Length: 122
Image 1: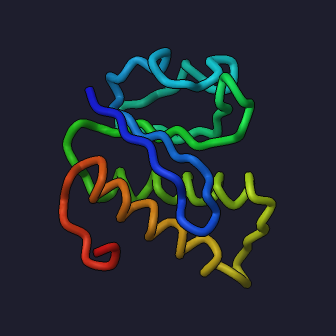
Image 2 (image 1 turned 60 degrees about the vertical axis):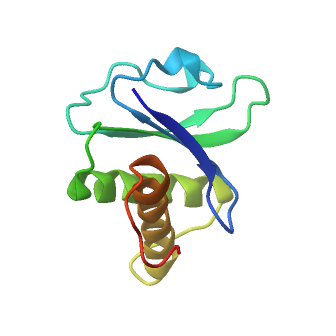
Image 3 (image 1 turned 180 degrees about the vertical axis):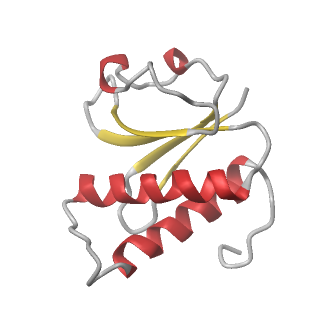
């Protein structure tokens, strides 16, 4: 069981990252703001709210071991949620708006959650 939280640089949205087996009731997340009935064999990403302040955040649940494809997949969802929370639209004409935060979120998860090296965040 593992948990880490960080703020997305530039957007400052809080991102909670935990293993699939981490009890979400230990987090400062409003239980009504997340879906508990998901198929999380590979991972999960959802919008959530802080149970004390009501501020919007992102919850990512991942396997105990780093699996690049799962982390990239959930990082893409997380980036889309961050942009939605911030009110920043994206589409095929401005995909870099989505790609940058996806890369940063993946790097932060890899470095801070899995304790693996990341070149561009050093």
